[in-house]
Length: 342
Ligand code: SP5
Ligand code: ZN
Image 1 (cartoon, rainbow, N blue to C red):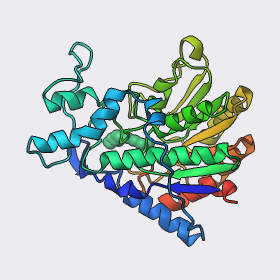
Image 2 (image 1 turned 90 degrees about the vertical axis):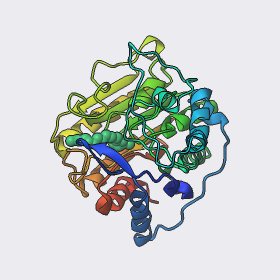
Image 3 (image 1 turned 45 degrees about the horizontal axis):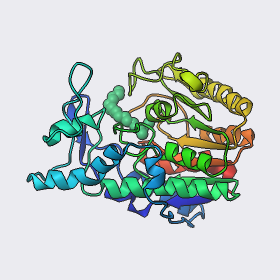
Image 4 (image 1 turned 60 degrees about the horizontal axis):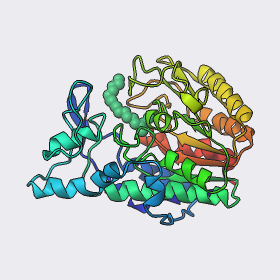
């Protein structure tokens, strides 16, 4: 399998997020990728490819140009006003207030492009986000060119990002950008299977009215888990997309037996759909030791996950999402990829 790394992954280096009422060091930090690289090397897998640069066009297929422009320029605007700390939003134009992306006040503008507060922006955010998206595109292009599988080892993650706003540690929706790229380059249908602990709200929203992209997500029940306001079972898509989105919310404390039975149901949907390619939003925050999640998967369980995904038999692109237990993250990711590591 080909593995593509955005070497600028550490340029996103947020200091703090709010957790249980206090500022704590960001869970989503560069040590996650450092550890995955280290584990790959220990397992004699040290050939990591650099992303090609596909430019802004494939990003603009998914994201609004005003939003992309915001991500590119907000740090300079922030600096120009004399600020030095990371940018964190603190007011949002929820219904009843008026969204205004052209607002002159930066706090008002920032809140208009964000949906949650735990996602700092700093000098290197755009570089990491841009190269992360290019990494996903490169992995996708390799599979389009005939590779059986590829892995985008990239950071920051993407599945929470919507067409026009960021949150949940995500800025650009890498997997949506890669899926759209596949459709533009010959595919008729693609399936996205999101196995991160959290609902892939951005990906769901982006393809909600489309039937050429089947979106499936297994996640912690939004009644008790981020992102709270999406991810329920009755969100099935709309218009042409009705029936092409499926959510599998699972209760707190879910163990591998229930999780894997659910995975097999989702795999059945993918087989029936008849996709040309499968894209996996690969989060390992389902791990039993994850500090912000509460499923009970073990490192060995991820070996079976690899077998079950491989049994679908489709050319497959894996794109890294979450997973915050840094010590075992490398082995957990390696095990999900194990059947594809040829
Ligand atoms: C890509 C990804 O995995 N994003 C996850 C974003 C989750 N952010 C919210 C974290 C909230 C931390 N505090 C929650 C306490 C849970 N008991
Ligand atoms: Zn997650």
